[in-house]
Amino acid sequence: MGKIQEMEDDVTGEKEEESIMEYLRKQVPDWDDEVKCTARFKAFSGQRTDWEPLYVFWRDLILSVARHLHIFIIRPSQVNVWFDRGGLVPLCLDQVLLEMYAAGELLRNVGVADPASGWVSQIFRRVVNLGGLLRPSTQENLAEEYYIIPVLLKEKALQVVQALSESHWTASCVITWRKFQEISGGLKEAHAVLNHLCEHGKAKYLVINKKDLMEFFHTGSESLSFSKSTFWHNKSRS
Image 1 (cartoon, rainbow, N blue to C red):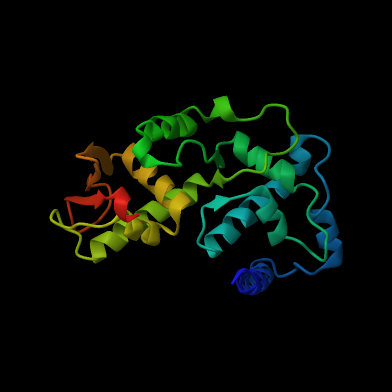
Image 2: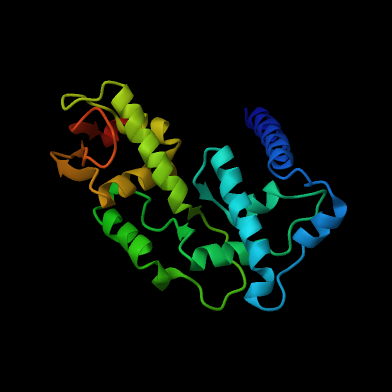
C-alpha cells in the first residue's frame, strides 16, 4: 500500500505541475521567452524602487497561482516548485516571500492547530493584528513552515459560509467536525477558517459537556440567506 500511495502521490504531483505550467503560460504569455525569463529570475539588487516592479510581478503571480489551486496555506519550498524551469527557480523568490510576510500578506500558521485548546483564537488574533511581533527583521528568507495568505483565507471563509447556506443550514442543523474539514479543504484549512470566522464575529466557540459547540451567525455584511446557525464539533467523531 505504501508504494502504491507513493506512486499515486507522484502522479498527482506531476499533474499539478503540468496544470500550473499551463496556467502560467496563459497568465504570462511570454513565460517561455528566455530573455525576459532571465530578467525575471534574477535576484533583487539596488534600491527598492529598482526591484519593486519585479516584486509586484512575483507577488501577484504567487497569489494568482494559489487562487488557481484553491489553496490559502503555502510553504516556501512549494512556491519554488511552482516556478521551477528545468531546475532553475527565481533567485528573488525568498525575498518576495519575506517582503510579503513583512507587509502582512503572509501570516505564520501559528496557534491554529486545535480549536479546542481555548487559546487558539487569541493567538490567531495576535498573528493578524500584531503580526509584526512575529515578522523577521533581519533574516534573508522565511523558515520552512506553513504560511496563511490572508486575502485568500477570507475568500475561502466566505465560500465555506456560502456552501453551508446553500445546504439549507438552519439553527437546527448539526454538522460534524469531519464535514467542516471537508468543506474547508483539510484539517489545517478548517482550523484557519474557524479562527477567521471567530475573529470576524461570524462564529462563537463553546465547550459544553465535553462536546464542542460552534455557533455561527450572520452579521449582515454579506448577502446570505440565514441569520443564525449552530453546529456541533464532536471530537469523538473526528
